[in-house]
Image (cartoon, rainbow, N blue to C red; front, side):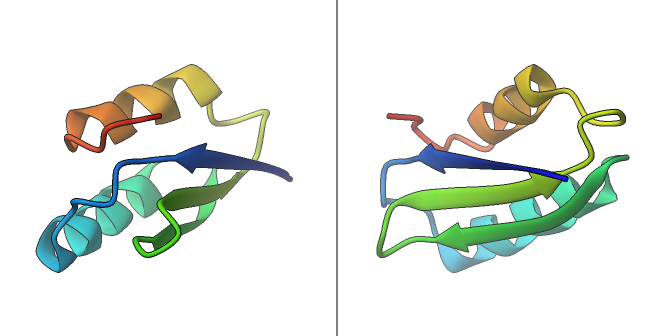
Length: 68
């Protein structure tokens, strides 16, 4: 299991975060997604044999999370 931590802009709404977490957890190989708005972080635990880190990053950007 690998963990990815990404720094983001802190402007996301609670509704957007909930929708984002549900979509990420639906992806094959993603076991856990945690969004820490106050810290400006997204943490994702994933199976590196099933999930592609580049695809995970693309999904984060689709949700208008500004990756820093």
